Length: 592
Image (cartoon, rainbow, N blue to C red; front, side, top):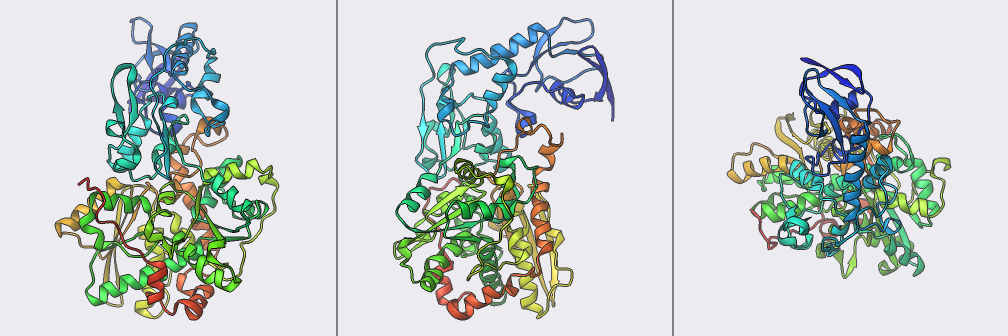
């Protein structure tokens, strides 16, 4: 590794060759105000000019350069705090503010706005540049994501994330000059574009230009109407919610989260891990039926609604390869509206199911016509992890001082460790293999964990398992850029796999588009490498809970067994198909 000698503010340092000034300064203990690399890992390519510093190379002049893209060189002298650099950064922010809708009090990003943060750091003055503003587009036509260009600063981070996560170009710079905005082609709505509604763009937007569509008002209305309001929470939420209240990334807060939900007034609080166990029973049985009866292979998982949207848009010819299973929260919602309501003597129309999800695409999923029976939706509202944080804060609940409480235990209170790990890339595959192995051999897999499919990266992992003479070839991918490779193999007839897990967001649900924002600038006590490790830390929170569970295989969940005995009959039964399985839209607009 070649080292370079540089000076920052007159002090001597050695740094690696190839670093930008911004990166080098970070390693040497300096925080240059910026709206790119160190906040989200997506660089805005110097478009905002917030990170300007003075740099001198050799005997050349001191020049203002954008530190996020300018590389360090041998003998470079860097000045961050000079009057010239300080004034330039302040002016850059003031110019951004001049074309920005400054209704901060009403903005959903208030308290987490990076533009406001750098405005404070640079000492930007209010109303320094006033005049005409770029014409605004407000798009709220999908149930998942809203776009307000009056708050957009044209940084391009959302464009970069859509490309890096999915290989898609749903978002781009539209129009020219002063009229430039960011949006789908021809400034169309997300509704009329091939957006998979994953929400990755919302996690990197520095302002409130891209946000989830809030459903808190729906939940308020259900309480006001006297509905039986039941909440169910996805496994990945517990690995992120603590960040909303100052906990370090990867701190599991399950007990406090349950206590908060009870104080918010929910009649019952359930873990979607039960629904995950139910999914494994249905999906594992479906896979075995396909393998033994000559069904369509490979079989793709169907838990991720972002992936389902992608498949319908780009690979409609492969939809028969998708498992027909609904996702866990939709399955559990269907059971709440049927079996649970029946046990309580409630009319399903009086039951209101709220899912707390790490995902924005779940908001779209719940509105699919396939996700209702006799006009009654499986799930009525979806809140993201961020929305739950807002709801708790709004209610005056001191989250950090709450006791640890347990989930309600009636009917759907038990879950296995297999259900917990659904929130991590490879978790659905591992959970399914634990049960498929048992179904094929009659005994449990000895070491329980199938570590071959673990990992928080967005690449492709594969393995071959010999289960009692039956070889099962498997693959795991997250992010549509990786999914495309596997889909193209299936389309070409060259795929060797039997079972493929696809997760929409890179790293899985722990990195979902509805999770807490990862911003080191708002978390000064966090590790410097947090952008490289946050997915692994959240994943470990789920793996550690799996390890603590007494029951670690879905088929050993006693309440799952009871549900089949008393209500569903057996996995893949007629009633199970009616409530827990779905179909897909082959007639959506194609973008292949």
